[in-house]
Amino acid sequence: MSWFYPFFHFSIYKIFTYKPTEVLYHNDKTYEDILNKFTESYEKNLAKGIEKYSNRDQDVTVMQTQYILPIFEQDWLIGTDPVSMDQHKLDEMLVDVKQSRDTLLSLITKKDYSSEVKVYLVDTINNFLRLEEEIRYIKDGNNFSRSELNILFGNLRNTFRSNFNIFATTFYESSHLQRQ
Image (cartoon, rainbow, N blue to C red; front, side, top):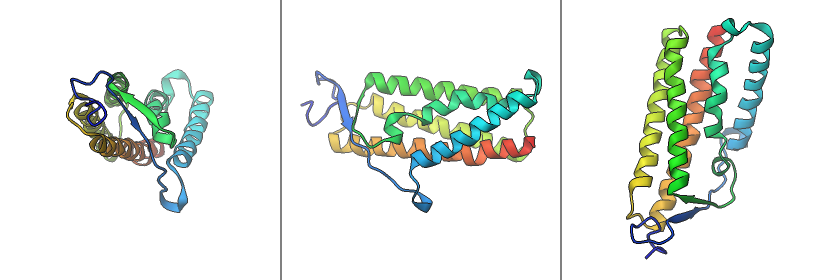
C-alpha cells in the first residue's frame, strides 16, 4: 500500500522521494544562478546599510530579508538530487513559511512604504498564504498516489520559486529603490 500511496494512513513509512528536475529560466539561468545573484546583491546592501546608517536608520526591509531568504535556499529548490519528503519535513517547511510571512507582516508597521511598494508587500504576503495552503494540502492529504505527489511537489517547488521571484524582483527591489 505504501508503495503506491506513500502518505496513506495505513502506510508504515510515510515518506516520498521527490526527484527535482533542472529548469532553465530566461537567459539560460537556473534558479540557483538567480538566487545567488540576488543574495550577492542583498549582502552588499546589508553591508552598506550597516556601515552607512545607525541602527535606527537602517533599511528594515534589508535587515528583515535575512529571516526570509532561507526558505528560498532549501536544497530541494536549488539542486536536482532526490530528496525525501515526509510529514516532519512538511511541518518544518510550513513553520518556516509562517515565520517568513509573520516577518513580512511586521514590515507593515516598521516602515512607511510608498503605496506602490505596499501593494507589492501585500501581494507577497498573499503569495506566502497560498504557499502555506499548498503545503497543508500535501501534508493533510493521505490518498495521493506517487505520481500525484510528484506533480504536487513539482508545483510546490514552482510556487516557492515564483514567490522568490515576486519577493526579490518586485517587493525587495522596489523597497530598496524607494530608500535611495
